[in-house]
Length: 253
Ligand code: PGA
Image (cartoon, rainbow, N blue to C red; front, top):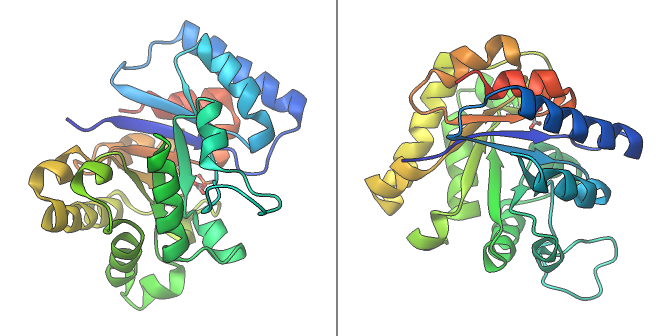
């Protein structure tokens, strides 16, 4: 059975003190509340906070992910962080191909594929983002766009490798805009993504793949989004910056 997952993407937010406070708030709230043990909770802070996040997570229920990784193994790549380095820090997950990286840092599907390879070679589970921009949805091109992203970013993997992948469908027009995909729009795309996986790797691999929704997911809409059969959780931006909101989303299943 596939895992339910709620992952928080902090992006480039929080001072060190604020990050420390948020991590401890999450940990304390997790002591006070009962989260369904079948829900995996992942916190993805900026690189400099991975170590304190790992320290707090050691005593808590959540796990830690990174927001990015280099597509290269090692060497003269100033400013990059390798999968080897993340693995050494015991980082279990890493976001790849977020729309902000695609838009601002020109991350192509080929780069996404190379990053996924690096992560899998270092036993880190990739959380691979896909999703269309508004003009593409308005032109009814969302399925074609997502299909290309999934095929070119992931379908070079063997079935065994693909089994480590988590997918996040994040319509770009819904990210940070307060505008959420309707539960029907999310379900429709998630079912489509699962059908692509089934075609390529078979029904069992498709059934076992967690597909998260991202884009203005918050406590007030998480329940109706997660109620859909193909929505296995969320990748949460803004609402993950507050411990109570983040946990309220995790409790929405
Ligand atoms: P948002 O961001 O929840 O703030 O819309 C989601 C994301 O970018 O992963």
